[in-house]
Image (tube, rainbow, N blue to C red; front, side, top):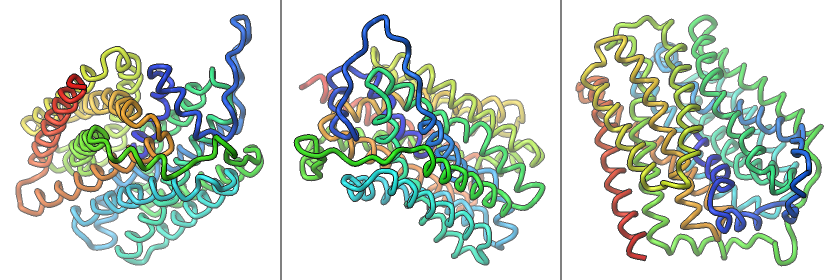
Length: 428
């Protein structure tokens, strides 16, 4: 999800008003193709795009799988669960720094070379994590892996779009986003399953193998491409101008608060299920899979209503997340309620994501390269602060249900930010 929010920014741009979508063309590796005749057959998506989707599956699995591995990691490395939860924040910190920095740094580099280098660093980071002798070493490997992950997203999205005509961009990005969604549905529960039966290190080895497969696929199937030249050449100074707009900062604030609300709880969902709801650890992969199914469903629904009702979608989705989190704080001791509300949280959280990202493209459409990267950074700021605040609440002795209440409070702040953004939008 990580990274899901940033990737959705590109996906939603294809469902956004034509003017906003057209502005994204400056970030592509080749000029936009004219629309085909009405009788033309649907474009076949190149296999290279599917390879990028496989790579995203590996990236997403690594980003989110720690939510199901906190307890075995804490036991093995002899740290508290809140300390283990900071490993989630470590990855998010790397994404916060890496997304805008690497997006800017790789604007003019050969795309395939950049992708292979980033995947290699990411894979080595997983190997280093699998053999990490201490908590400190594991923490560093999470930051390095996240930097590579953020860079791959920044470049991979541009490559995927450059390999298809204008009329197939949404399909290409759906495959990229689909890799992340499937990571939540299959990869994260599979990581929890491996951690329970063969140790948490086996999950890192499995992701390293997936990264290696993606690396081979990129080398064999992604064509050599060069960034645009001439008038279409990316210019960082032009894109940096978006940060002078207060609406950009409002959009980033809402993104960070919404992400913080969800991940304050999601990072500690495993111990909440076992220690509060009384479920066995064998239930954790199933509930994580249900959250992923809810996320996929929420994204699908939200993407179809956000264009016509952008602020309404944001109000409804974020408010619903606040309600779900508040209910979970009250009813987490009941296993059925804990499982059902975990599914609903996936729906409400990701129902909002297309609208949040569409909003960023609306206010920063003149800078498509940094718009998606900055949204990814904001999402991961929330993913950093949320688990940290959750750890503070747990360390204070208030328990895991208080973390859910904290998430509800952050969601309400995001609703307030949405109201302010809407008011300024109407004033314009």
